[in-house]
Length: 283
Image (cartoon, rainbow, N blue to C red; front, side, top):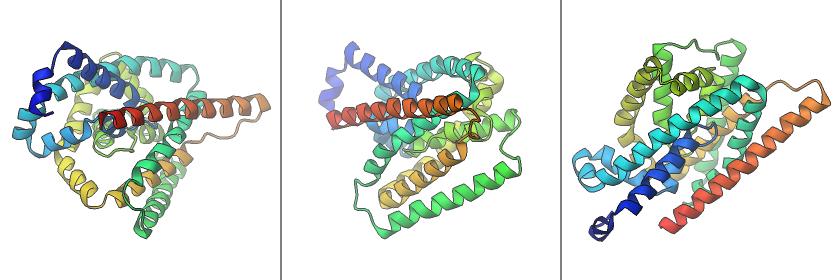
């Protein structure tokens, strides 16, 4: 935000920043949608990383824009959590299939973004290694019945850490991992009823993650963008594969599964295309 933009800042611009935050918060809580990707789409990622890397100068330059944007994120985050929790209580399997579709719908945009710089053999190996390692880790956790983590203070700190990662690492969706570990629904329920036993440990985990890792991740993306980006795609792909529920025994059940996946993919793809257009217009 340069000097001329500062002078022009008015109520209209504040509303735009707030609505962008609401949109980012709404999308970030859905599995498959990365908070970091949305921040990139709205032109907020660089100001956030710059501010976290150099707090004094960052706040001096971006305090108003980021302040309004963050308030919007909170509003969107809290607003959607109750809806998502209600739907999961009605039919967990079908909602999970829709969420799988959300994840699938983001792959074209993730692949396109990762290819902004030249793809190399290292990019391919980064994707493959992260895919295989993550598949192995999640498979072991699933077969050993470690995937269901009991809700509690430590579990919600873990949720906060993953949420922090999803905003620092564009393309990484924390909700996908939380679904796998069985923490997504209890977290949503706690957020929707403003349970401070959930919100406070989440805030602690998120703050610790953002403050400790923002500079490291920022440097990694600058120096090894294509390698890190393709590694993230591998992690997201592995998580998606392991989220698929057991096949339904009836034809109607399988059709419902497929329809939910397709619908989720269409909605998610449209959402990412919209974000891409906003990013281009901002540029």
